[in-house]
Image (cartoon, rainbow, N blue to C red; front, top):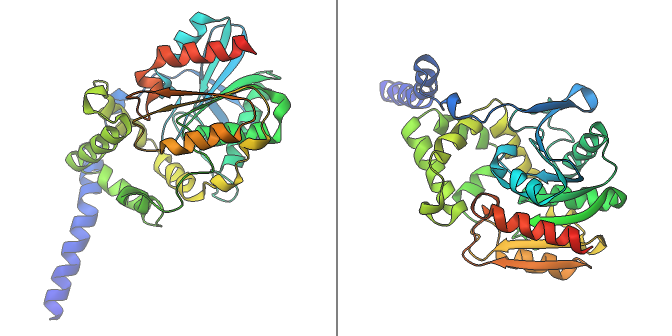
Length: 315
């Protein structure tokens, strides 16, 4: 019995430790050549920095991504919106993602409130008094939080496939349950160390996000794996997923002109969340994208640019 237990223990350790060791020794992890190019970096408080892409000149429009994501996930939208301008379009990596700083401690970080503070610090660093804020998915919670705390800094609010108070309370699938557990980071890191398993899991997640496999851009799986492989990204992802409090969002208190835009085939954030946001926001337009998924900035950049331009021009 003792020999059996010892053999079983060695087997468990081998299964758990050998893939990460092999990945480190032989470079089996994500390929960094798929990472997006570096852009501009600005300093904010506490010695941290935010990485961003900036195009155009005119009315400031700040794009706030979801999780796990980064500024490059907006793909062509900054350029297409700037071309409709005049707009100064800024897409940045939130703290914990892309090439921006990571939080040293979990206390007080990776929440809507901490992200809103960092967004305000970015506006200060770029000397922007007021901006159009565009929040995608989790980023919608960030921009609503800043709009509640400092409405004078937000001229218009755009919520793209955004979270909202009507989000379901319980985890919706296995991945959500894993994210809610303390084993999320080590488990995802272990999966990431096994290329076939990592590629399969990333592909399955993207198929759900895009709703249809044919809509996933070529190379997007390897690009996503490379970004998730950056140090600290999985930790930020897990902490934000575990700590998000949609009950803290108060869209009914936001009186700036707003737009809610949501895909009819969004499998990550239910359509009724968008309907509820539209009902709660005192001054909002609502656009449904037929056959649109959660990834509207990737699949419908022209439509998004047009609708944002229409909103800003109308008010």
